[in-house]
Image (cartoon, rainbow, N blue to C red; front, side):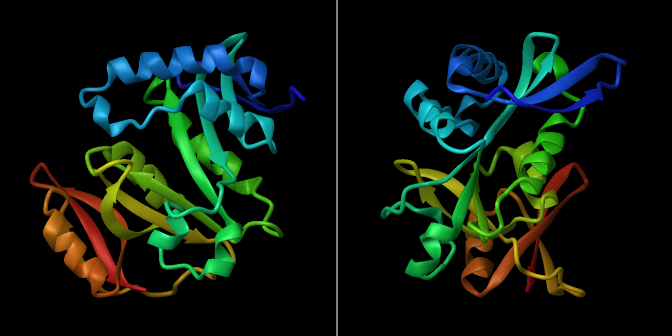
Length: 230
């Protein structure tokens, strides 16, 4: 079902619309993904999906949306109802085995380099988060490469917290993030400490001590991740 969700306007005044994506959209999705990958300074920060993986996402529930200017796709974002296996992110996040089926992944997000600066990644994220079936899913999990600061800012702003920093996907270092959709917002965060984003060892140390990553800030041209007890 090719369902239009909403309309909007870019900063330059161009009108766009958002709709659910379908299997027949895979060719334009792959083309945009390739364009985004080639535009990255560090392509390793993107974990591209294959045609088969997009087919899995698009063959299930309405979990993927695209932003279009007329018929041209300029951005897409996906969520995934994952299989429960040994690589499940819920395990990395410390969930119990019976909780794993309640996890949905915040998956790949891509914005055409020509249309960056319009807040489309966050815009799509909020749209999808609002449409999660909370009767079926309790947790949202995601991974982010440490160098992918825009993606990390995106996940943190959506309320996900860093719970681990470890190797995934065949040895690639990744932040593991999670959000409990049933949890009430914390009134206060205690023992907040900021750690240089490039200091992997210290971040892993505080995570093992029970801290969670909740924010990011820039100071003296350096990026710091804010960790606290929650």
